[in-house]
Image 1 (cartoon, rainbow, N blue to C red):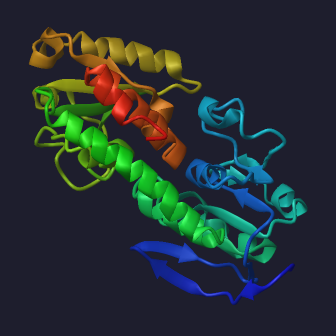
Image 2 (tube, helix red, strand yellow):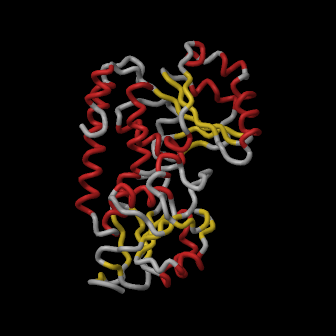
Length: 304
């Protein structure tokens, strides 16, 4: 291993399970493999490029918002099925990812290179980013990047306080079911940080409610209703289910539907990517989604 090293250890940071591999960690890793999109986005946000990364879910092979930064990066399988032989051949200094997908592979991964896994890439995006930043030897830069995002969030939060439409409902259409999102989801954390309120069943700790039944449609009413649509191989069946759900009389009777305040959001940016670059993309959309005056939107733009 090149350069100075940090002894292997097991740490719990900010409530996230962080697992170090059996080798030493290079003080400033030069060859990083990422096993989750949020870890890929963390590396890119810090001005680095991974040598290998798992394919973006539904990507070709990468999500559009990161594709231009991923030139020359080797695809090392899927998030739930990384190619261990290919990862080893890249001779990484560090492997980053999520325990949610990769915990079972930790013994093998840690024999290849030091491995740092956050507990769950779907929630706690700020804490996850700081964990990745530390592992990369870039904590100061990570905190600076996070501070810029927090400044934008604070600016938008203040602007949104002057808007009448502040209660938002969030759901996703999957093949044969609807999932409603709660406070610990990526979108839930972001909307909470922006000072927006939620319907009672969504204003709860937790990731979300799967198989949300039509009998509960009345619970979805809000000032604005945002929805995502699953977009992988079974997209046609998802669209058919969405059409049937939206044709239900109970849906049609929702005040938010009658007022035409139902808005489709990009499933990747708002639900699947979970990284800091997706946060920036989502924040870019807030002024238009909430009809903020152009001057307020500009005041809270990236690079403020």
